[in-house]
Length: 183
Ligand SMILES: Nc1ncnc2c1ncn2[C@@H]1O[C@H](COP(=O)(O)OP(=O)(O)O)[C@@H](O)[C@H]1O
Ligand SMILES: [Mg+2]
Image (spheres, rainbow, N blue to C red):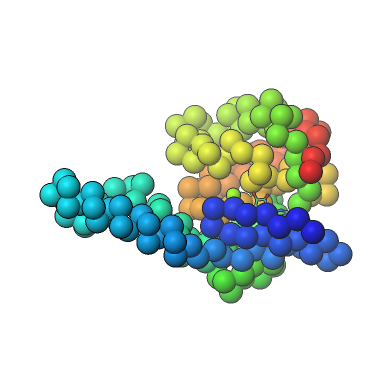
């Protein structure tokens, strides 16, 4: 059994049930080290701590090290219930701390980069995709499910906006035939 570590979740596959358990990560060490650095920065630059918090990078680190995993788990569950499971691996249940999601088969990074990524750009306008580029550019956030390409990390709001607008169109492209399974 291979356990996967994302930025905000730890993912445990339960092979015989065909599901994964996604557990929200809390990273007190990362939080504390960033907090200490930011306090020093705020002293050096004479800027207030509140000013620093408004900076987007700081917000991401604090959120990723505390509540982002819980929020992503709940948002994935909500998205499945509200919008169905076109182009996503469905989430069957979440209580925030953990989620139960359908397991996907991983896709080979090279065939994903050479094929799927460019096809997304044919559908999603560049200025929308770049807002969430790292998510849509990594094969780790996608997988194969019943012969179709689906997304398995769709807990961010930016990703969900793109999925709502273009998910069906991307699904209709049937990109799985251009990809090779991996791992
Ligand atoms: N449904 C799934 N089936 C199989 N593996 C998954 C599934 N969901 C996530 N994973 C694996 O776990 C990793 C971390 O999960 P992810 O949802 O990307 O968490 P994070 O939001 O922390 O990035 C993914 O990169 C992927 O390798
Ligand atoms: Mg991820």
